[in-house]
Each structure stands twice: as structure tokens, then as C-alpha cells.
Image (tube, rainbow, N blue to C red; front, side):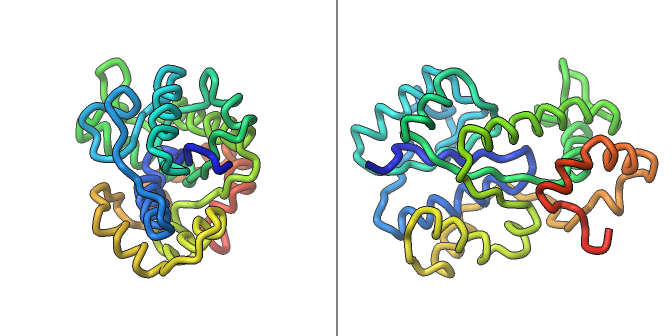
Length: 237
């Protein structure tokens, strides 16, 4: 039996909404409907099947609704970590998914953008994050989430921001292969991008132009293993 849920986990501002929309479009093209789940499963008011963090109660409701619908799998987007019964669901074959990553230096730049604009994920205790030093703790948390999702879903494809943003067809092909569908990728991309409403600056390795050299060096040292493991450094860096 196919997994009930396909978890689209992504680091914040990593292109995970586009990855989710690509996944949803490929599933639909493969004959798997992707209806929006109820508010007990996904975030109330959300246009897509999204939960910032998936609790045991949310997971149970998601699985219940997916089983009732008979659509397998249903794509779910999240930025949260692995909590509660998620590991058991993975072990039992009830979920599969993908992991979307981005250079921690770019994540920090986007976080400072959010702080300047007063958006929630750029705030801590109601106070905007205004320095790369402040952003570093958040970035560490994001990396911990990546490690945990990769641990419970060892076969999940890991997709980088630059691949999603600038080599979208290659990313779509990777997702389609994982799902086992031979679909019209160009049509799926067109559908996904027509529904895509969240945009990053669309600049490859933006930290090179925005992050002070001292902060860039500190991030490079702190997150060297992650950057190397996921091949996130700019060419010739």
C-alpha cells in the first residue's frame, strides 16, 4: 500500500512552497487528487495543506482524512521538526516525503528581511531579529529539523534552493521519479507556478552580496559540514 502522506519539509525560505506545488501538480497529473484537508488537520485559513508544526493530533487527523479520501499520497507542507508519532508513521510506511534545504547564510539573510518587515518568523518574543548573530540560533534549529527528517526518511530526496529556483525541471523530474509517475513535467511546472504565491528574492547565493565578510566567515565555519554535505557552496567557492 502506498504511503498516505507525502511530507514536504523545507527550511524556511528554501523554496519549499514551490517544491510542495510541484509535488502536488505531479501527483494530480498522475491521477492522485489533492484536496485541501480540514482545519483539524491543516492550518485554518491556509490555502494549501500546510502545518507549521505537525502534532500527534494533526498527524492522526491527516492520516484519517487521507484514508477516507483514498487518495495516496496527499502532499503536506511543513517547516516544523519531527514530533511525537511521526517517526512511527515513517517506520510503518504511512508517510514518505522530501527535504528542501538552502545555504544557512541565505536563510539568515531572509530572516533579517522578515525582521525588517515585521513578519512572524523574523521575530523573537515580539522583537525583530536585526543581526546575523541573533539569526544563528534559529538557523541551528532549522538544521536540526533537516537532520531529523533525513533520519526518519532516509530515502527522501534532498532538494536545494538553487535547483528549485534555477533548475526547476530537474527538480520536478527528481520528484516524479520518486513518486513513480511518468507525467508531462512542463505541464506540471506550469500548473505549480500558476498557483505559486510566495517568492524569495530569486538571487543565487545572495549572502555573497549582502552578508558582511566577518559574519559570512563565521557562518561558513559554524555550518561547514552542512554546506559541504548538501553541496550548497557557490561554484568555485
